[in-house]
Image (cartoon, rainbow, N blue to C red):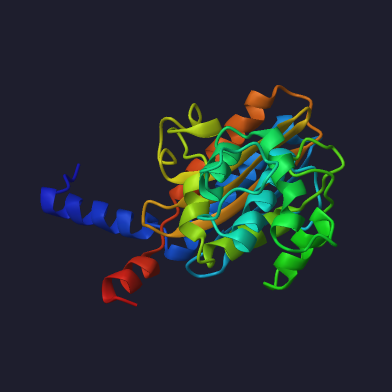
Length: 288
């Protein structure tokens, strides 16, 4: 029997690790496979699921599935309401009249009160007040939203509005449109205000009790959405390497308890924030 000397054993282990270490492309594929596996869970087999995740740094898609299909977004509709208000009025502006805000409250404060606890009445009131506040009383709120984002190169294909809160089951929006909105707000001068108004995973708002452990805690800012048979989660994730992603997850038509779908979506967020790309590290190190 031949014994392997310690030095030789170390060399063998090093070779094995080198061969097994994922390349940057493999790392992306691993995340894609994890997300695909999670969204293929049996509890979602009868559901319609739209999902999209993109890199805000590189612009490439990390994951896509049925992203173009309009689905009931539930409270993810509040993203459109608040983003449109910020773009038209600015977060430091006074709140429009008739919204139920105090005289000295800014739109920034109101936005946080809408998005973090998911306040339906405030969201509906804000949407209805926008045409007058923006000096476009001749437009309906949906027409104003479509015009605002169309002027910024985002066309809300397939989107249907019946309120500003997402309570209506006739509201429709695709994961592709949601991510398009998130990308547009990431380049907006109001980006920081918009980010701060979103719930932070494991910390506050409707995400206070979600993702309390694991890599996504404190790395995901996103809006939840809940109706019977509807679950949504859309926002931003920062990977452990510092790469920022925009993502949208929307499920319609499942019959299980919503907590099970939420758990799957949370696990998707955990998978996204573990994305590693060696080339990104190299570019950051070189200052590019």
